[in-house]
Image 1 (cartoon, rainbow, N blue to C red):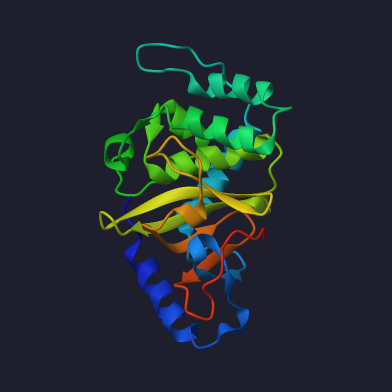
Image 2: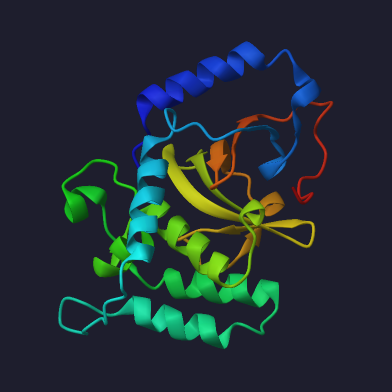
Length: 227
């Protein structure tokens, strides 16, 4: 994914300016220190415009998908899967949704939308039979919401992959005092404490956003406490 550089600059400036005040920071995702904030539409326009488009889509009558050479009707398959998973355990829901969503094809925003960084709704993601990393995360986010997960259990995380020096988006799910990472690049659902190459920049859901600082010797404790 391509990160919004003005946003990154602002976040880095804010982080540097507030790093001295550790009293509001807590141990969080990937062992980093995190700080919670109220929603800010000015900082995250792509996230909030996606939320608006998604809400409008929910208010419209559902259209029956017609399978064709260009359309696979993954949205109908997901609806069937969600009905089957109603009585499954929380971990089974996470694993099945991650596996199902990862079947879709990775497609760049340039190819799908002629746009360098477009955050798609689940409807748009399925209509195009795929998308890029944050589109996978958003689709998983809403699928798990349909399966009863609370908003405060879910975060779309924007991170830097230090292995290949690119920015990436994953979904973090908080369940039973563990943090599970759903990544479109791997089929397995893994604990955040088992991942060393992702450096979180910020995370967001419908209620809040979080920013991150690397752990220090005083704060290097195990991550995974529920929010």
